[in-house]
Image (cartoon, rainbow, N blue to C red):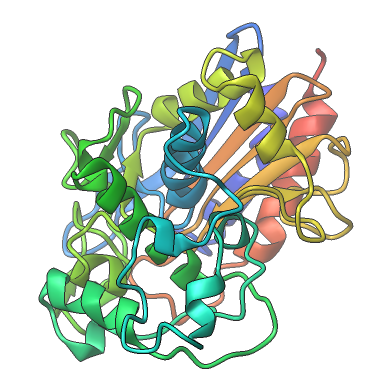
Length: 333
């Protein structure tokens, strides 16, 4: 099965569109298949990709880490998802408590990306002190616009978690093969960062995540293929989440968005062959995870498509759905 499912990724590597790729598939009963090809790094020295390499998961961090943290805190009664963020962050826009729109945003709004906040902001250009930049995020009057997928939503959720628990996100217990950087093993290289002046390897690719200390709410998590598959299996078999959490991540809240995740829609990155009971999420570095609850099947495609630069056509936006369709076609149950 895995050989057929891996054909799109193997072709992308062979054609030089991406340096390396790992595809992992897991069934609800624990069966796993993993296939890898290509390079973990091209520069400054070539390095062969292996199944033991850690990937910068980028925005997949949102669903593997931050979403689960928020929903676990809700399960424990420590937050109300429909309460405003100010219940955890009372100083949010504290100089305009009477009319600041940010003070009305709820946890659920952020989870479902249904706020007015912008998609992204070059926060790292305002300084490199994590505490000062968190204060900047909290006190800035954000420009308002239509609801979009927003890193700012999850940066705020990360700050809320820090306030509630009194600890950084990196202290949260994660499964084996998941860690905030630098990870304890061989690491896939990402981009030659113009801001930091070097090829990134073992440090978070996302500039804002780096400036915010490496473990904010929107990015920063590293994972091996087995680590990501272990997380996915826990959702498939129910051992890794409560019934309330599973319901939240599977139920649409904002169009095709659930709590953190996307649910299958025509033309989405998970392909068209998966069932309607499929959720997924992608990461800018070239990562992604999809979970088909109807079939009891999940797959992760991990690539280093931004290495050595994001400013090229890697074909990732066609590779992802092609891989999803190939996985379903090869699946025998």
